[in-house]
Length: 287
Image 1: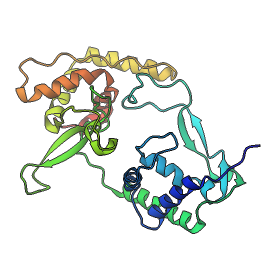
Image 2 (image 1 turned 90 degrees about the horizontal axis):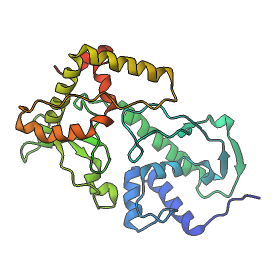
Image 3 (image 1 turned 120 degrees about the vertical axis):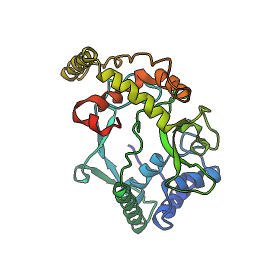
Image 4 (image 1 turned 90 degrees about the vertical axis):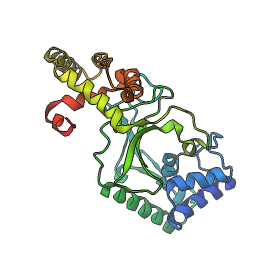
């Protein structure tokens, strides 16, 4: 018969995590850094902790004495703007985790590790964090948000600002796309990529020139439209690569060349680019 047994050495770490978040109101990333500083290993023996792992622990009612079965179900994944790192094709299995209402859980009493008041404080803190995140005004400064991928390591690019001068002025900054793999703090202090960051205006100019060239060719637009219709009719069909964009003009300014090389390498992964010319959304892109 299956049962829950308390491992005191690990239970101490669990109580620390709940206290850091529920009482000290520490962020999940700061919890990860604290665990790495004390050389605490995960269940698999890894030394790097992820915020998603911490969140999964903090939302597990088993730590307050209620082991719940059926907390989630798995469904086929939704179409993505870009491929998952290391997976050129989507999984044929149902891999997307969908939460189930607590009324449908099957709860079994188990030995508690955390005081119920601390657990409630943690849940309140996580809910507050969720509301604050939703209240943030989404920025329209990053045209390629969620689309650009590093060819060298496969991690996504994210937007980052840098001041033009030593004195920071939010109105006088440069925008860059930077590879996640170059951030050492995300990988226990050791970056996994050395690809340089790219000026945001340079990369976006190149992409926009490519999109405009595609839009100006009705034949290629019609071919892409027909291809998308076929994919929509057969949800199990793996979409083909996006229609290849023409090679950019060799007279492109020198400042665009590094970004252009990166774009050509990643073109076949940029399925989301087609949203730039689909329907009325075109008007939101700079001309």
